[in-house]
Length: 271
Image (tube, helix red, strand yellow):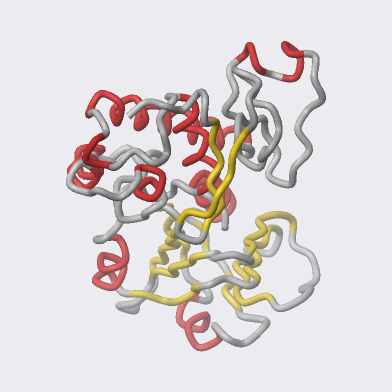
């Protein structure tokens, strides 16, 4: 499932291509056809991301004029030069030259302002949004006895943070993933939040997740670059049984609430 930086990149791409312009909206697959008719031929006023949700607003004479998209596990949104429709395109937005084609989303629905508010209300702060309040997340964390590794994946606590950022930010601050939220120091949370803001912003900029410091890059260490479909250089994510870049001990993995957790047992001892 794409992490939050991907959704923010898509929002930027949609805005760069269409914001303030009259667009054609269709559903080649047919599953969004009735809603597409209501937006077709109207101005796309803007797109924004909140966690893993993408909202595309239209200036249309209807009460429900916002498309809410959640890509889920297999969804893809391509923004680029228009080309013939291929595959099951749920939604196409185009100005005749550029097209945004959506395939396989978990959610693609037309919503009213009240319905958008209902989606956003339970979400935690998004490190990539200027209006994010990390105090909201802290209040939920320090009242919970669940492991911090589980809490960081909870979209009600930190919206947009996924498995990669979760594993990497805990490693970077040497925090035991099993540390209960109510045992985590506030100063540690403040460092985690600041790091998420910086790392995820870098992900938006570069389109990949890089979390290693200069001293642990392939060039600095004389090692091969990481080969992975997610791209980027990381410390522990998907490095199970390989040596930790910092201490050399074996990177560990286990399932936590249905997701693979990665960490270094020697480096990450802090509570």
